[in-house]
Each structure stands twice: as structure tokens, then as C-alpha cells.
Image 1 (tube, rainbow, N blue to C red):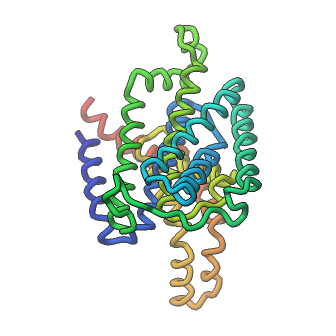
Image 2 (image 1 turned 30 degrees about the horizontal axis):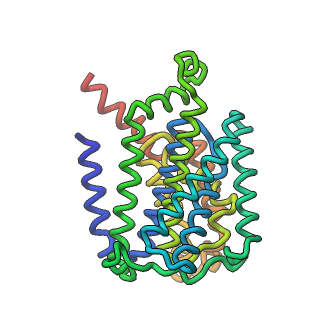
Length: 326
């Protein structure tokens, strides 16, 4: 019951958000939140650390942007093309990577993702270092004009809710229980007769598809796609979001994504404000030190909040609430 109340409050806040905040920034938060949730499905509930999710996120963005700008596809088909691209990349990369475990799995995903990065750098349709520019938003179902930021916000919110609901349903399904069993004790899952590689590959494809949906939606919102989204640093960023928020929790990746993206976007403004009111000119350079600040946050979380923000909250306050009931 408490969880349902929390979902209701979060939905109410999300519905009211565009009237109090900048819709484009809020849409960017939703895209990265979905990206982090997709990654968490793989690492938090299957135990697979992928360092190649940038390939799904950015690859889908390029395909969607090209389909909308050059081919003139409807918005829905452009997004579906991006999701299909992510699913295909997930199938290929997962099929190769699941042959190994642990750090070897992670390194294979990183190597394959870097191949996608170099393809994005060299292929002519991607725009190289300039990226894809001028991607149109178009209309939804041929009637709803997505050029309006507020209208597009609610479309992006609906996409996020659908993706999040799919993740929740997956986690609580028999398939999700098998994924948890593989994470906790893979040899025992094998002894029970489960084809663990089949389950792993399915989880990778599903995670890649949701990450691709986030990347395709981000390209639609911002109107461009660049190499930043396929670079290995984006894979590292989503790892940071998930660990800071709380790996293996539903709300943790969302909290982590909001915190990291808000920090990246608002740190410069905050530094300027401090420099103006304190007279310390160094504060004005905070916007250029985002990597240092996020690194410090990561170190603090590893040392003091190993379960992440949400994980620690559940461990402390959830345990206290459960003891009286017991």
C-alpha cells in the first residue's frame, strides 16, 4: 500500500512539473531515468555488469534521428526503428558476451560498444564529429503537434511510465524470479534445469531495447544526436547513476539519474551564484568541474552508502518499520 501511495505522489508531481520547471530539461531527466532503469534491470536483477549500454542508447538515437530527418518517417516509426536497433545490437552483443562471465563479460561489452562508437564516427550518415542536427519532432499519430514542449513532455512521461511499468512487471514475473536466481546462485539455477544463457540473453535484449527507447526519445526531444551518447563515458555515467541511487531497487536509478543530470546542468549556475555572493572567483569554475564533483559523490557513496541512496534508506527505515510489525 505504501508503495502505491508513493507511485501516486510521484505521478502527481510529474504531471505538475512542466508548469513549474523547464519542460526540455524535465524531459531529459525522464530519458536518463529510463536509461538508468533499463541498465538496473541487467545489473541489479540479473547480476550482469555491462559497460556497453552507450551503444544501445546512442545507436538508437542515430537511427531515429536519421529516419525522422532524412527519410521523413512518422515519429512513432522513427522511435520504433530506434528500439529495433537497440534490440538487434543487444542480441548481437549479448550473444557474444554471455560466453564469458564476470570482468570478461564487462570487457567484451565495452569493446563491442567502442566498435559502435567508431562506426558512428566514420559512417557518413551519422555526421561524424558534428553529429545529426535538425531532427524534427513531427506529430504523434498524425494529429498531435510535438513542437509544443508541454505536449511533448506528457508524451515522454507516458513513454517513461510504460517503460517503467514493463520493468516492474518483468521483475515480478516468473521470468524475473529466474533472473534473480541466476544473480544469487547461477550454478544452482543451472542444476534446476534452467538454460541460464537463454535467460541472460533475453534480459540483455530487453534492457537494450529500453535503453534504446530512452536514447531515441532523447534525440526526439533535443533535436540532435552526437558522439557523446555512444562514447564509453556514457556507459560509465549510467553505472554511476545506478550505484548512487541504489542498485537493485526500483526507485534508485531514477533518483540517481535526477541527481547526476541535475548536477551536470545546474552546477555552473550554482557556481556563478556563489561567486557573485561570496566574491570567491573559483566558484565560477564549478561548471567546468562536473567530473570532479560527480567523482567525489561516487567515492562518498562507495564509502558511506554502499547500497546507494534508496538502498540505504530501505535498509535503515524499512527495517525499523518491519520490526514492530514482527
